[in-house]
Length: 104
Image (tube, rainbow, N blue to C red; front, side):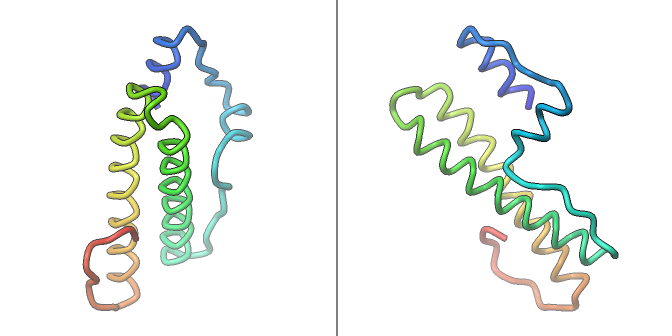
């Protein structure tokens, strides 16, 4: 989030950190799981939504704003890693064999 705020500043904008504003602009919704496996599943869904959202943003900015695109590509890599971690955690708690690393 810090990198996004810095980029907004670089482009002459003003980041909005109001908690209500952040929630209304979120790509996913908060859902509370009833147990650990449900919580992991909800987190995995949120990570997958974030991955797709960043992919869309990268396509949108394309070559028109390489600085923003590179920043988003870095964030996308982090989100993909989070999705993989959640998938591995879910597999471990459901007793499934480890899967090849992918996008969750």
